[in-house]
Length: 111
Image (cartoon, rainbow, N blue to C red):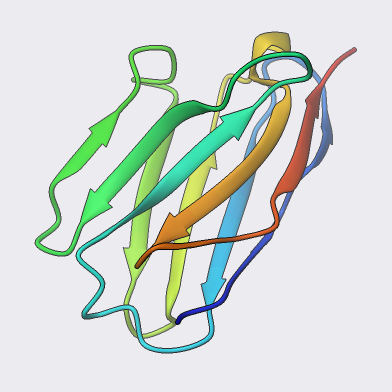
């Protein structure tokens, strides 16, 4: 089973940007669907975005127009570019793919 490791989280002011990375332990070219979920303190895990092997992309309404998901098969990495961040984006962001999950990376949006 593939192993996934996220990075790129941190503290950012409202309106700022972050880019999260999800590095896989093997080639992701054959993985049909990869993406991101997030979980804020005291809340249920929430879907953020996903990308299909053929390039089709889907976003949660709450991030549409602000977040961009992409995958680089040559680097075995999925990215989540997050712009215009809001305090309500504060959460632990986890990537998924091929029935595997990463350990998550913390994003805090605060002034």
